[in-house]
Length: 79
Image (cartoon, one colour):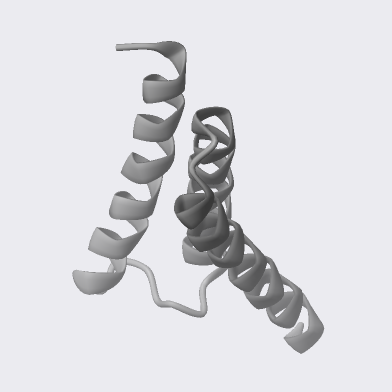
């Protein structure tokens, strides 16, 4: 595996962990932990997609990163 593969693997693993923890009711979708893991995972996966120069996943993961960032902002506005 290349470095780009490892970067993408880490990002996708974080996204999968966040999804699993939400699915098993360990983290709610409104929790800072869930939003943060999603933000980091999507950002890392987006970076890997940029390295691969694969626009569909750059758009997908970039959008996911922005949506997660929006959720984090909303979380702190509520506090």
